[in-house]
Image (cartoon, rainbow, N blue to C red; front, side, top):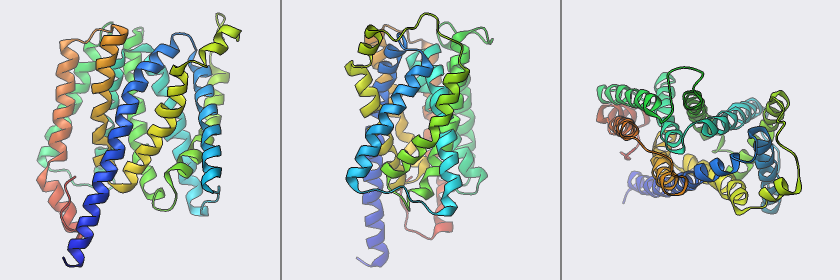
Length: 326
């Protein structure tokens, strides 16, 4: 094989391994939705966020030290890392946590899957991707699916007095921030390891979590008793910290680093599949026909956008690389 063929083969292998990492992250997050929902029934959101990230950062720092990582970054990368931590990790996790506590697990997992839609829109706006007709139609279908899920979530009404409606809006905000997170992290992953980048971003996110706890209304019914401390020792919380936070995010960063953000975020389809099955069987949450219709519109629209051959052809012409499926 010639030089171009060798590069193509290497890129294909890297793309497949990147998609494998993204698939693992999606499955871990699918389980995480149900586990978090169970924990939030006992632990208030601000305390949950502080303990989750406090434990996660401690483990990440220990792991990074064991790997011989250092905290040095180029001066030009300081601001991007700060923005990634504040918004892509801090605010994103605050909106996600408050959102999932107010809506159903299945709706939250389905709406977070709109992250590829926002990733695509950001990519088109910044000139990274082209917007062909199929992509435009797919985008319209996905937004229609969002509306259907928002209005058909059990207990949801189109008013801010509805907890489920507010929860859905918070999850959509989280999806928007997650799309930013995916795009902003890709160039940084060319210079830093996934572990180092996520550790730094998580540390930067701490002021957001502390501010959220300080501004939150007091929880009169919560006491740091021995029973509450025991709640943190359950396997549920261990899963959230180790697998739902550290392993999942590192796998996600690895996926983004080995392939494109648009390709990687498509593997979030694994999350609603796993979480919906578990929420129905373990939590007894209802899953309506409207939610199923909205899911079909979102998934169908995003798949149509993925296979827009016009956009792909234009991308290949710009890069001059051999054809690689998105």
